[in-house]
Image 1: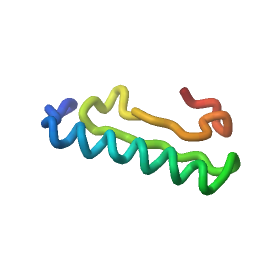
Image 2 (image 1 turned 60 degrees about the vertical axis):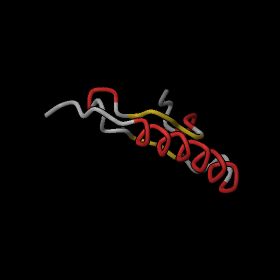
Image 3 (image 1 turned 45 degrees about the vertical axis):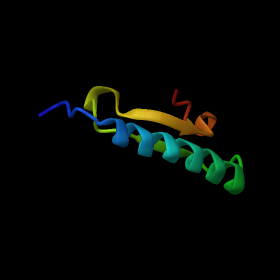
Image 4 (image 1 turned 180 degrees about the horizontal axis):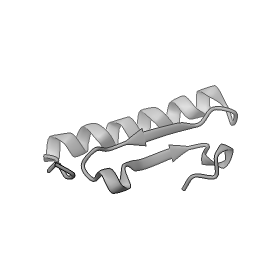
Length: 58
């Protein structure tokens, strides 16, 4: 199974994680990279990156 259909609740939770990861990245500083993954589509699993300049991920 390569794709999982997320519910509206799943998307709401992921959206809250974006806010948390951004805040955590601000707290930890520019030398900490945080990556938020979603398993809805395994081919495009990264959905949010904080301080991506460290690994050049986009």
